[in-house]
Image (cartoon, rainbow, N blue to C red; front, side, top):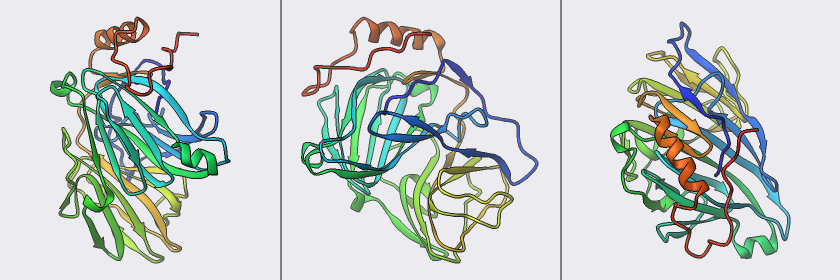
Length: 306
């Protein structure tokens, strides 16, 4: 997805004295045929581990003849991670990738020094109408990898490990969690998982990583100092014990990892260097990024200051 946050520095907050370091409610962002819930970055918390952006797409019903059309747009200094619960998105990028993303799959696109991509509803679903529900996260790359060559990797759902923990079914999407490692190649220590908790479940969240969070997709979590329903993220304090309890059942995203340091964000550009962001802005404005084969007729212009 494409974003439009202002240029800003991102710094980890000071350590909290309670189990929760932050409670973040998704903010609605209208993208036309789709309303997304923007969770990160937030005024309360800019990053969780290396995760610097978190959007919940939908859940939405797309009427016949309608669909999402995220026109070609650029990224630098990050990796995008797309995961769907419902629906389908066609991904194209400037490397020549052309991939349908279906529920349970992980699309990991490393922007590195620069990539352009588009995301659209496929023609067959546009004709019939469809539903869309999913998550897109951005992972800030370590400073040493920010200028790496762009790459694209698609991982079908059946290639991702699952494990049962305290009755919960956990699919490890990226990194390592509960002694299971995803085949998705990452650049820094992190974890990202989809967990389905049955009614009455008490799921312990690992204390292995410095920064950890849970986002509620469906259902609710109870027994913490804050009750969390759909659209709420709980960020845990470093080293705090975290047990995710639900009375009625829930589906949640688990994420976190080790911090990668301060980052600047402008639109779809992430970097440890403001100069690099300014260069990326000039390059996009002046047409120096590569185009997307099969989707080169239009693009999202660089947002200009108000």
